[in-house]
Length: 511
Image (cartoon, rainbow, N blue to C red; front, side):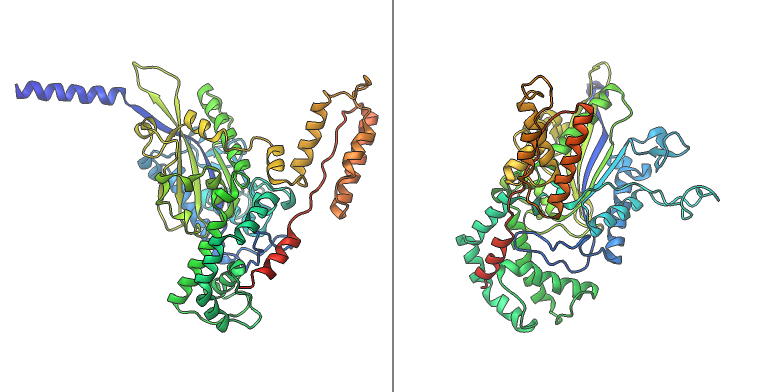
């Protein structure tokens, strides 16, 4: 009888193994924070000086992001280590190098990898160093006439003008969000924190140069100048703070910066565009994987900032979900070179159950290059996701349903939400909307005789130097349209930003 029971148990175990699903990684969407950089002075509303490039990435920052790339490579590309976590990213013909597809050993190319960065020195260089870790140099590849002599696998980093960047740095140009911050600075919560922190700030004021602004609104700049000088020896000299006092200084700065990124202040305005971008590429990847199409992006990357990472988390409203209450980034800033990764997994049922793959989304993070990857539970997590991939995982369908009201699926949606129509994407969206509203025709049957109306809209651009350039572009476009029978449209205007209000805010909060 015992033997019979053992046989039944063994048969049931075989049946379970036979019918269980096998999950495999289809694509990843990674958002990285840059590495250590020089001192960054920024406004209370997260704006920065208009210096092209901004503070440079330090040599230590290069190593931090490179090391993060090596760790990423071990998790997703190195077959000797990624198998254990079922996170091996599919390369072509089992290749792991980047280059011209079809060549020996090449598993990834420009049809598989898409890297974008904000237009700043620290993020562009961080992206380059991160991917140097993912695709390390191959010293056997160079010849007298080919490849970089070091054997570096060069991965292109795409970027755009910071003025037009609403994907990675929406937080610097969203007027509605800045207005929310202004209101928060006048809130009881902020006043209470100012009173609570007054003794600490007074103590620091006595140790810093006399002209140091130690108001709570300016506390990030106080902390950053101390941290960068004490840690890396760059920037203006500051006194040496003991560990206990420095921890208090840092804790206050972290409270300030993470509080600014709460979803009740940000809504989906700072991360909604990136969330829509993520959803779009995951849908394309799932379609491509189902159809057997080889050409879809398997590795998508945004080289950005902690506000980029926290913005997309706020768009997902993770700070409102009890299941993520232990996630440290909700109360403490991501460490330098921290990585946030959305993973798209596919699970195929084994025969005799033959169905199309089911897809699942998991969110993981690495809080600095030395940390391990951990899962961030998503609000749409389900038992199906847990069974297929692991705890905290959503089916792709549930993820799409959850994000449908949170993603900003058009540039115009962001422009309207943020009350800012200056970025190029907003101008283009207005142009398209104007033409769509007119049905592609001015009503005279000529499909494009609305030059006067186009100019009426165009002159609403603020005539700065860049505004003048844009007006010139419109003029050339209209001339070309006349010559070639082009289509009519309008051009969006620029709204006044909150720089003046921000200066007033500094003077107001001199506590």
